Image (cartoon, rainbow, N blue to C red; front, side, top):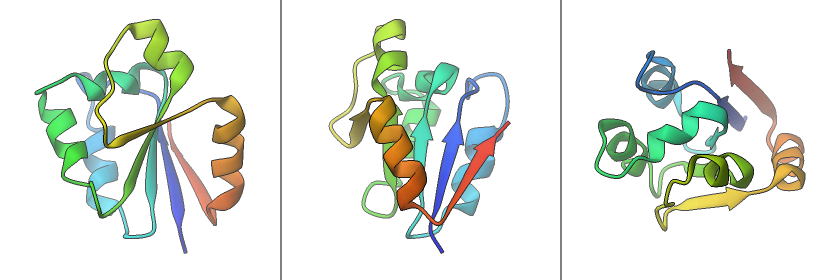
Length: 99
């Protein structure tokens, strides 16, 4: 079963991202929104950890939150809008929101 893991907390304030990455399966994906977008800060440990998922799991990021924080996006990150967020929620068997 595939799982979409939704993260909204900064990876610099807690361990949700690292916990999530340990549990990712090959059919899973990560969607970054809210302050989790800071995981895309270039050359940071969270960014490097996410980049290692390239080819294993997909990484998505919510466009509105990227724009709000003014961060550049790596080529391996797929940027989505709210409509695509809903579509992803339907496409995956499960959605796990890391509250």
